[in-house]
Structure formats: structure tokens, C-alpha cells
Image (cartoon, rainbow, N blue to C red):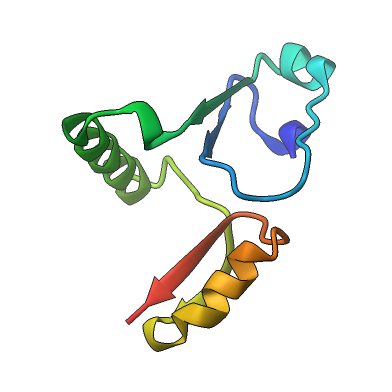
Length: 98
């Protein structure tokens, strides 16, 4: 995935529930001046989480953040979504829709 990120681009990992070990080629980062960063809300205050979510919403609305969506489920079918998440085979986020 890293080679597909534009030069000087950034990959942001928001949490991690998958069972896969991430591998990143250091030369892919260096040659493209790319950045990989992560974020987990478990250590942040409610105020920090709210600001982070606002920032994510703004970046998404501006088209600057393109999350990877593994699958989508109707809200009434949330159990199937949870089963997919718990399988540790999901790559990206699961979306629940009304």
C-alpha cells in the first residue's frame, strides 16, 4: 500500500483490530518522503477525542482523507458486521448505515 501513496503523502492508521501484522518497507517511506502515523483514542480525554473527530470530518469533507472501507451493513444487521470485525479478516473500516 505504501508505494501507492503520493510523494510527501501521509498514511494514518486509526486504531487496529485486524489480526494481520503490518509490514512497511522503509525504502518505500524514504524514497517517497512518505509518512506513516497512527492514532488510538484510548488515552485521550473526551475533549481531545471530539476535536479529533471534528478534524477527521473536515478532512473527509474536503476530500483530503479517504478511509478504506472493508464493508457496509444495515444498522439492523449490525451483528453480521460485528462478526466480520471479530473475524479479524476485515481490512479497513466497517460502516453501519441506517
